Length: 341
Ligand code: ADP
Ligand code: MG
Image 1 (cartoon, rainbow, N blue to C red):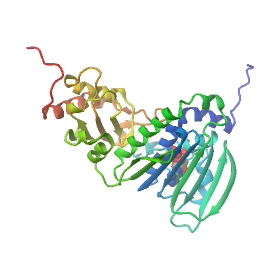
Image 2: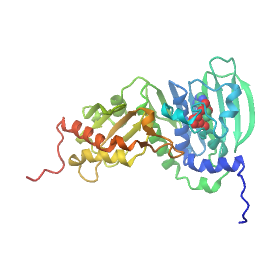
Image 3: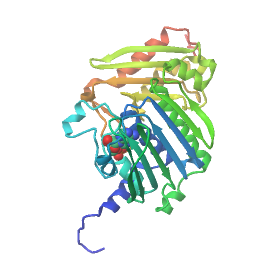
Image 4: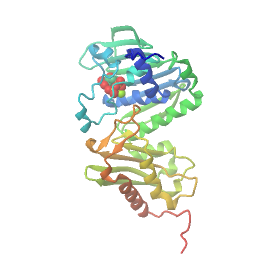
């Protein structure tokens, strides 16, 4: 190493960013579905092959991208969702960093067909490892279809790190279920190696989706929650009762403003509230969405957008714990361990 400090070129910057955004085929699926949701899609079809390593296609009926903007959408830090930092105070979209498409395009063969309702023709654009191959007008339906092929083909070391098709496929299924269950007004269809693994009608409730996915046992074993956590923050969703203690955390879903979050703080608060009813090694099932005024949360923590911070003064942990505990008290839960008098 010499001591000359260089500015990295765009290609290298994208490849580095892709390391954070494109962690696996499931993270690509998540980013693309989130874009469809942000485009007000009412229907989203996802098709994958071979664990998403070779083929991912997402089709939506959202508002599309005008021809003049399509190439721009694939550049780094280009977004239609945010223009100044203060926009975070009102931001409700899934995306805002403007780097998903650029990152995915830098490590795959990607194509987009997109059309806005106000235009007669759509646009087709193909990019390979960050290089534009083709861009032309094409007849298309309103909305957007993106096909991602050969993920990480130009970074073979990273491609080799991907797990088996089956394991990558399972992560994709989890991601789609997580998004599908909380966006009850959107019709989802998920096809994996030609098999339909999940479909929803776009008019269900969280309850119906929950037992559609996890089985009819859930039908009479869910409590609905709708409470205020603090001013401008509310909690809504469902809690599984004690007959639904499962061997894994797979059916635990936590969202903030309908965005998937991974938060030890939030899941610990909920599990602690369940504690006296759960035998060790068993986990409750729940799907909870915290609706918060965007000015009270920080979503800009990691490029994968799974982390979130609440204003400390809000004491979210305690409030969440007490609300869940109170809800559970209302019904007959059989404690797993009898209290000792
Ligand atoms: P972000 O979502 O953070 O804005 P992305 O790289 O994911 O960044 O997308 C860049 C831009 O491309 C978005 O801001 C949006 O304007 C446009 N876009 C991406 N996907 C879609 C889609 N499915 N429908 C309409 N517009 C889209
Ligand atoms: Mg996005």
